[in-house]
Amino acid sequence: MDYSVYLYSILSFSGLVVLLAAGLMIAERFLINYGICKLDINAGEKPLEVQGGQTLLSCLYANEIFIPSACGGKGSCGHCKLTVTSGGGPVLPTETPYLSRKEVRSGARLACQVKVREDIYVRIPEDYLNVKLFSAAVESTRSLTHDIKEIRLKLNDPPEISQRPGQYVQVQAPSPDGPVFRAYSISTPAHEPTVVELVVRLVPGGIGSTYLHNLHVNDGAAFTGPYGEFHLNEDPSVEIVCVGGGAGMAPMKNIIYTIYDRWPDRSCWLFFGCRTTQDIFYLDQFKELERKHSNFHVVYALSDELGPEEKWDGETGFIHLSVDKCLEAGVARQAFLCGPPLMIEAVTRVLEEKGLPPEDIFYDEF
Amino acid sequence: MSETSAWVIFIAAIFTNNILLTNFLGMCSFIACSGQIKTSLGLGTAVIFVMIMTTMINYVVYHFVLVPLSLIHLQFIVFIAVIAAFVQLVEMFVERFSPKLYFALGIFLPLITVNCAILGASLFMIIRNYSFIQSVGFGLGAGIGWAVAIVLLAGLRQKMTYSHVPKPFQGVAIAMIVTGVLAMAFMGFAGMVAIQ
Figure (cartoon, each protein chain N blue to C red):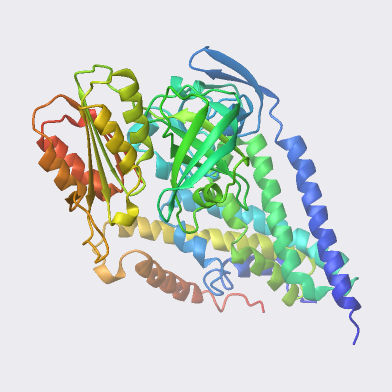
């Protein structure tokens, strides 16, 4: 039996592929060269000059403007939306699933799909221009429940973050196809600017949560941020209502501690829905806060039947029922919801019945 | 080597041996992109160009590389690699020199990489022992034949949006049936010229 034919086949096929790849690379070198293009942000606010031929997202990234993106530029998350006023070419078929007709008319595009071929004019929300890339080290990790971990990241460079409660960061997680970004809310209050704490639930097969759950103390981590549109109402007479479920605790913890740092007497409610006593976390420290601040009220509710071993003297049933029971109608409020879509929908309905206008209800859905 | 003239092969590839309607190759993009005449014309044009170019390149690769090295068993994988690389190259060219055409073709160009009619044309050329000139005629004819078929179906499907198709037949089902009817109509050309 002569095996040399296998060797020849493999060698010649590899040779051909190398040749084709080299040819393509040379062609790319000469063909995809658009020279230097002007990139204008917010009508002259930040004029840049970039090498043409790259995507808008990578041009901005190279110039330290971090647009949120979860998929790493593959056009599958739709987060990197921004407005291109001119020079972006027509909307591509890869973008249309993520843009409504209204957005297309106003010039919204996905930055990862737009290629810079000529001078280009874009509008970027002011918040994104303040976003920075942070490098940090894990200060501590703590298991809160069987699948939820609290991870504290100590910032190295830059050493401080300026964030508003309710904002989130995008943690860079390695994956077989290059780094991906996953969004997590910041749970440390704004007056602790040197640390970013995350509350992460382990999703089976999830890239970001698996990575974060496997981090050890002193491991390095990188993230961009802060992102998020939420603005806490600065009027202390307005009551704040936080409703969370499952792992949706991080933004509320941030909001509550920020409030009691600034307004010790402000009225605030925290409702948190769990399934069993196993899922309860942070209850002790919120009870402690409740003792210190008479206007803070914390309500945890269990939705599943109690097991034979479990003891519970608090609320039971779904969390929107507790919200309905505890809150009076007609009080000036701002609400922040964080949890699964069905919970958000049910709680929004209850809050609207209590006379809260929809523009004062914010939510993080997951 | 086959004796038929290149001109006859060209005509036969369009009508009697239409690669789509007699061999049913390239059905996926045929069904998926035949909603509108405009898009199907764009895709058809791209297929014609890529098909004629890849049959020519594959002819050279086969007869001047694979045959001398007695590696003809590699023809499938080599043809696929050549087609993929060529489509990439064309995409770059079009993007650079005709952005308008690039945006008009959009995602169709990369789609052609996995169009089995393109690979089919290269393989038929080998099976039927065509000379270079015959291969050019065949590549061009097969491409035009494919484009004619998809534009015909697109025209019919556009008309069909105004007709009452029974619910179980709506969408792809009726497109398949119409394709079958089209194929039968093309059988009428069968006696005209013959290639094997």
